[in-house]
Picture 1: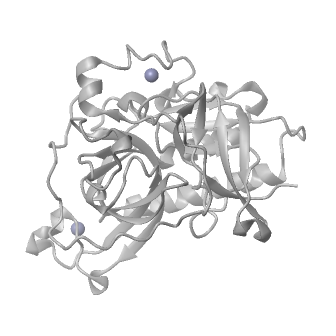
Picture 2: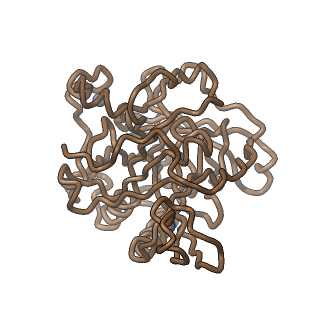
Length: 342
Ligand SMILES: [Zn+2]
Ligand SMILES: [Zn+2]
């Protein structure tokens, strides 16, 4: 596959690195003890063809490439036009994350320090914010050139796992790829430079990364998709397809093995609820275990669980559970905040 980006190890920006936000700490412990993170590496996939030697999911049944996804791909009980449309939204909101550096501030137990080449994970895009020249000079690499000064720019927020993008040092050496849906990446793929960490929570294993674009069409598309995804999620909460509480579906969209986007389906096997100060406000922190297939490269992917309404960062977007790895033969999300269900 043709790669368009140069190998990057140095800083993309000329402005001073902004302050790291403070950890949003949940004041609780997730159960990360035996967790295997699911990142992969550009060089590893290129040189060892690790997808074909994958021990986690030999054969890779259950991964459906986005370009082949149709209503027939849905598990039979969930095969409705609305569910298909929701999955299309989740597909279009998913991105691949390439991180070209590893921060010195990581703990040695991350085992990321000696890896060569970009670290690959997944994420999902949501809030786009607009700035004009009045709001400051665009910090992106293109705008280093004075002739580009004063352009309008947008920060696009992306959720991923904290272990994929750890701090501002890594954020500024990250590229976010939208619409990498087929091998022919010149077709539709858009690449945005990462800029800063907006917010992170180490215990929940979640990072909100901001990246930059000047293209209003990208921003408008994201707005539309996130509004639709929210509507569909609300619809399924108020019009359940089945009232049996064991009726469940987990959907994961990501970039396992640095492939073009895939979607996979499974069931939620276990949910752990963790009481916190927030419990009184009708919300609860949860983490999920599920059997929807994931592989190295899936870390940070959005985890969508049928019938759950998540409390998002800001205005109840569906962003709060991200895939963070596998443990005891099951796949597992980081902690997310959701509305309590009766
Ligand atoms: Zn695999
Ligand atoms: Zn710029």
